[in-house]
Length: 35
Image 1 (cartoon, one colour):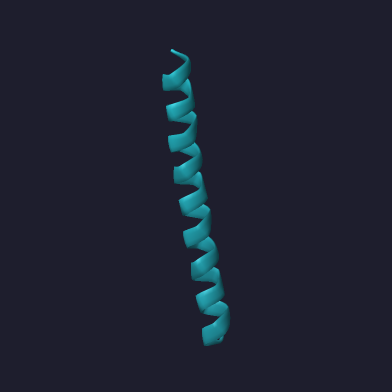
Image 2 (cartoon, helix red, strand yellow; image 1 turned 90 degrees about the horizontal axis):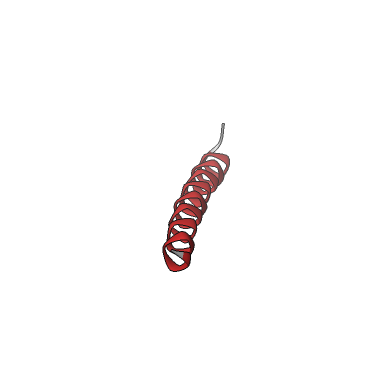
């Protein structure tokens, strides 16, 4: 596996983790605002 592919995969994993954490935070904030 070459360097560019490795970087792309790590970036993708980072973006996925980021979107999951943002989604979880957003859902929590939305639930809190409706309470």
